[in-house]
Image (cartoon, rainbow, N blue to C red; front, top):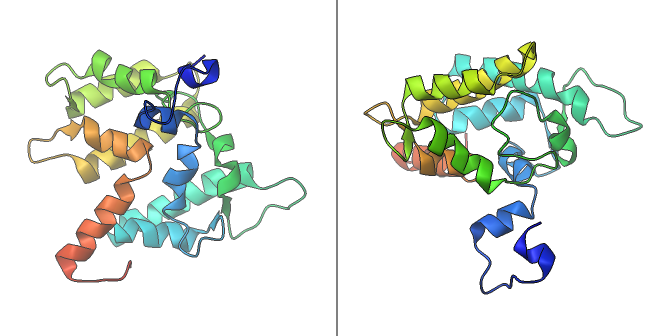
Length: 204
């Protein structure tokens, strides 16, 4: 039980981790792709989102196809039928949490600080606040659950895309970058950086 639940925390003493533990940051993470803010993400919005953070046409198209077809059915609200438009309903995104992951999101989509810190305390051997490609691979292998092949593929895809897009010139994936993924701010940062570099004031 956290301090807030025990009544010993206050707005003055609560930190960012306290806020993240009490909100569905997984929804915030996915909401980046919701261009019209209607609570639903369609494949073309996923495609546009990946393009806006600097991904090429092929990666954006493949990612949109993979993500929406994999997640859509699980998020369909009760009483609604599945759609060939493969919409992702953000309100139910926590239902898409897969196995063989880091556990940083709990079953309700909230941030779990201890699990986040564990990524680096266990696997960041070369640098305490960054992962090499090999260390990332070691983490993915350690998180695999027996015969959870879908979970293996999902985790590998998520982390490999993150590493490909966000590693620095020394091929390191930094802790602050990974945290920004989980708190839902990374994609916005990347989109802003791309807009500034191209002189484009609109998200494309």
